[in-house]
Image: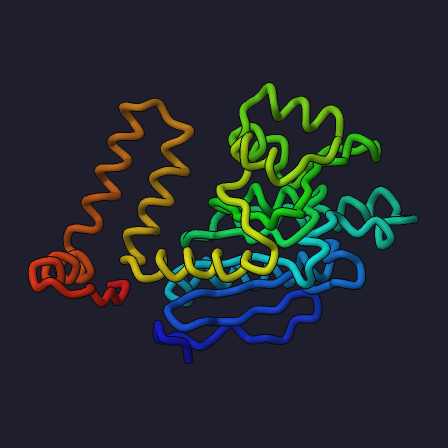
Length: 272
């Protein structure tokens, strides 16, 4: 059982590792270090399964932390060795799994942090962009190289990059396929913080713990309000915010937060 009252996500995966830390933190590690954690069909299926379960039962985790195994690569993108020789039909069938995985990640109601421990190319960079925010190791490098392979980003990259860095910078990155550094990613708004490599995971975990200590219903409502409101005109977005706000008024966590403040103690939020 986890501390939030549900069975832990079953660990029967071969390409990812899923662990649960105290306080409601679910840590997912892309785990194919022998191929720089490249995304293959099996990894996509396993990520789809985990995020589908988190979406269906959000009380399982208050925060999700996504990283890669090893120090060299976060994720090198799609596994091109697996794709070599695929028929058009096989390629499209695989990509349908990728598309379902992307939607499941985007639908995750709890905050998602990416800890970019190395190269994030192609689909790996798209994973970073699917997160709510990201920390990167100093040696991390990023690229969306699909144009150099005769394809284009298909895991949300043209849309998530646009929203992260603006259209002119996004077009330069997408049209050239050139790699860029962690410092450039920070300057352009793709990552929030650069960390020394050995400190990356602990810094990301510290932020995850800070978020997990807050009211989980509040963080979920904030995430939905920001994500949905970003595509609306301001008046409608403000109405969305008030609707989200009003859903928190009758909660036990709202009452606990106010009571704890007045009693000069830390609140104990239960997600109710």
